[in-house]
Length: 277
Image 1 (spheres, rainbow, N blue to C red):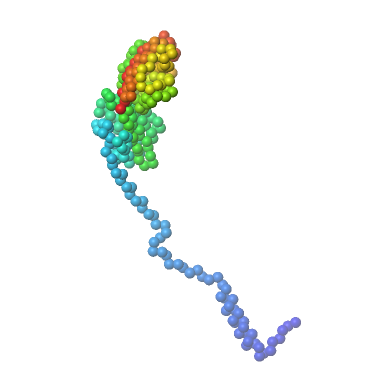
Image 2: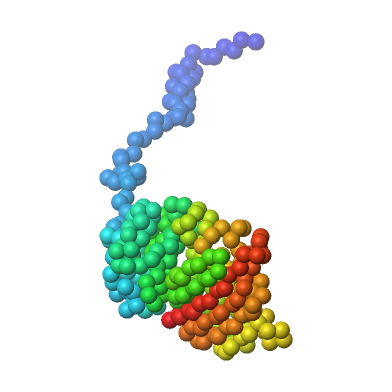
């Protein structure tokens, strides 16, 4: 049914329609207000502070000052262990530099690769001075550490004849215990796999004193590779016996008629003495 409004109500109805249209407009999505940019952008790159220079410590008195260090080396060691940090990652170059410096100072050098391009051991020996150096690569620097080690004078006679000074790899601990190993292992320049290896094993070890391999006294076993290949030039089984004298800062040994493990007719006598700081 069609609605008929009296003429007197038309002005009122038109006014209500106008007001309703205005209110509906207020519910429309407002225009976003633009925020004024901050005076400091949020994506600013901050500069890293310059690294603090490490306070240098003088190298230990036992370090041979004739062995020059790589440029920029900063000493961070103490009285027992020499340590330097070098802001350089060319570890190979530093190894070669130290080898040359040691040779210039009169040292015999032995280089051992623990991890190519990253970790090297250098063994240096001259008369009664021996050092073991380690070079380890870090993220942005190389750390060089050095300790003073002992020296072994090794003499071999028989099918092979040599007399050579070798650096000990570590200090020989003379504390009484179940066993003691006296020796060292360093590479030989004769071939890629060649080495000087000597191990005099005593069991049981009672401490400082004299040891004889005669039955019922002590078990003294000796193994020798006199600069050759381990699988081919290995001598053992001293059928002529071994005598070892152990002191706190050194000692000596004399072992007779070691046999080659592949050809027992090939024999050597081995003797030596060692000193350690």
